[in-house]
Every structure is written in C-alpha cells, then in structure tokens.
Image (cartoon, rainbow, N blue to C red; front, side):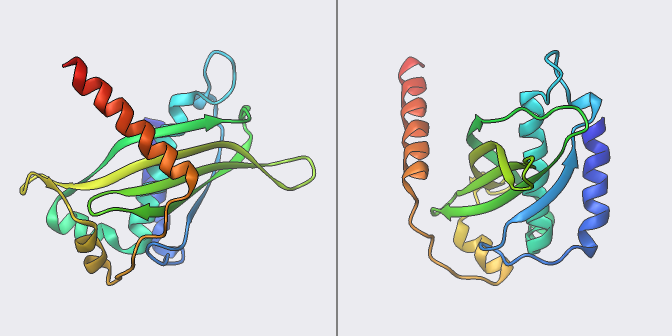
Length: 186
C-alpha cells in the first residue's frame, strides 16, 4: 500500500516540477527509507528498489508529456528485462534519490538507466545501486509494441539513438542469451 501513497504523491507533485526534455533530461526523485521498505536484515529490500524504479519511469513519462499519448491510446508500459547491481545498503530513514534516464533505443524498445544515489560523509554522491532496463510501450489493441518513431512523434521529437556503450551492449547480449536459452528449453 505504501507505494500507492508514493505514486499519489508523484502524480500530485509532478505538475509543479519542471518539464523534462524527452530523450535527454533525467528524472530525479527524492525518497527516504521507511520501516516498511526494510527486509529482515534491516536494510532496504531488494524488491523495493525495482518498485521505486517504476516511479522513476512514471515520472519520466509524466514530465516529458508522453503520458498524454499513453492514456489516449491506452498503451501499457512494460519492462522486458532488467539487471541491477547493488553497491551499498540503504539503512532505515536514510535519504536517497533515484535518477532515471533514457540512454538509447531501437525500433521498438528503450534502454533506461536507474541510479540510486545517497550522500557520503564528505557530502558527495554514492551510488547505492545501478540498474538497466529494456522497456517498451505495448499497444493492446494492435497487439504489438509501439514503434519508438511513433513515441517520438507523439512528444514532438525526432532523434537518432545514441550509440550504446559497452555496458549496454553487454546487457543486451546477456538478455539475448537468456532469451535463447529459455526458448531452447521449451
């Protein structure tokens, strides 16, 4: 239930937050680790990271204006694959923020980066977790993923994808290997 409160907060406050440049500006959301976010080791549960990253992607859709097209066409956001690297634990009541940015895209999907950041004793940023997800919008009526060119047209932008870095190439290769291994077992 607590994520519903965070989602409602996000929906209510996004109107007063600055608009983001689609396919360029990252979304940044501040949070705090609450007792209901903890696991038995008394640090933030690993599943909670994924749930909060959903809010980062939601904020990106809201503040770029893509949400209008999503609602109008009844598209459904989906994550096809994800990979996370935990680096530091987040303890009770510790403040942190999630940065969400679109890194690159293909004809039908986007690679989105999530960085969970907290402050070190020196005041500098510490990366607590880093995740990459491959996401898309699914058109249930058309039974197909929405082409990225159409998404760009909806938000009034046309850009070529930046070249994927080595970490994205490795991420996509690992996804393809897993997909192929599962297909061979069926």
